[in-house]
Image 1 (spheres, rainbow, N blue to C red):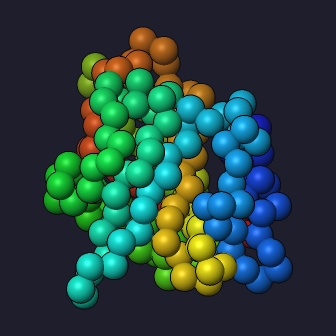
Image 2: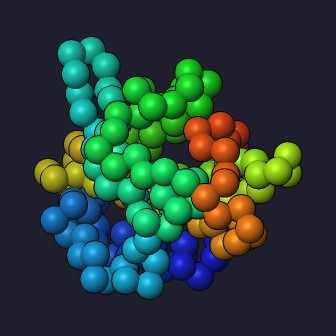
Length: 164
């Protein structure tokens, strides 16, 4: 992970209270000023017998790289079945394990694959039941020429080693 990704993970860990997960209220955006534009907040909503994910707030850096802002949108309404299925599986894994996950994601620009990392960290208002995800996009290796032109909602996600 890059310095900023490591910093984001350490920040999340510092907000945990023993075995209790950090909450959204514990997260101060001013503490993340160096990498805030790469952070996205995702609401976890239980609707009847299914879980849905809403992009509460997408970082400006992420929106710029993909050429669109998905703030306020539901994942199942904006992504393809393939991509949405990956997103739901990974987010559900974090929701159930209550542990952060890091994935390598591959996206495309000009028929070239570009890899980036996505660090997904659970948040819980009550310290136990995950109700939000703090997601850091580590896009340091994406060429600036690809800015605004990355294929959105089509990346392949591969788990990286488990995070302690």
